[in-house]
Amino acid sequence: MAKRIDVSGLSAYYGKVKAIEDISMTIEPRSVTAFIGPSGCGKSTFLRTLNRMHEVTPGGRVEGKVLLDDQDLYDPEVDPVAVRRMIGMVFQRPNPFPTMSIYDNVAAGLRLNGVKKKSELDDIVERSLKGANLWNEVKDRLHRPGASLSGGQQQRLCIARAIAVEPQVLLMDEPCSALDPISTIAIEDLISELKERYTIVIVTHNMQQAARVSDRTAFFNLAGPGKPGRLVEIDSTQKIFSNPSEKATEDYISGRFG
Image (cartoon, rainbow, N blue to C red; front, side, top):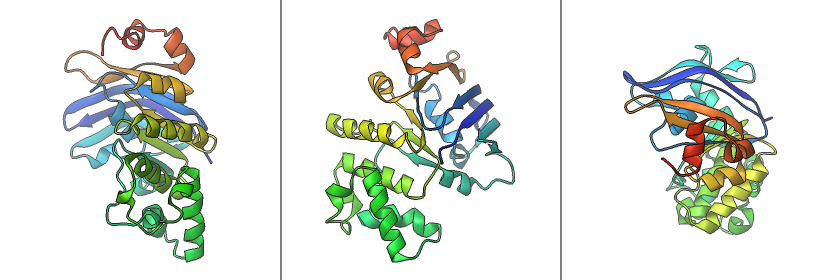
């Protein structure tokens, strides 16, 4: 069940340094929201606050609220591990577990969650690989190492691993930046299919990609040299790319800076 995310007044720190400041937005369920903006403006930091990965960084802390539907993810009673199960993440570089087979990569999270029955694991592994558009390419070599796949296949394997535990949200931090154009198209097609079941947030440096895959786009920028990143505006992708409300957004999209 895809869920909505409501963020209000969120700031994130690395030690005493404030990385992002006072961000508020709503991320709609069953849609793709893209984060764009120049390097170092806090897009990935903000993404990592949404599933409590930011606090894993030494000195990382967060102020403000992140609600998943009506549940406050930063409530002291909430288990961060449970949050990361509900909100899966796919990283910039494909990172299959190198010593594990394709099958075991997908099954790893399920086993951690207590699924032991082989028939159940078989079913979910197959369903997840099909969901990641990878099944037909790997069904005859499930017990070969995940690291034996091409880069694009490895990234789809990581997506299969993320969706196997049935999260409600998928976060993707530049999932295509290390991939060739053909693999990039495969991942973009997959994102379009997955949004029917998940809430998806993608950080991308590629504005054409944001325009192709997302329903809404958020533009981030630095408040000034040495200042924290902030959200400039968020709107429908069509509006952001054709008629943004803020001049800074227009300047970035037209290539005048960034």
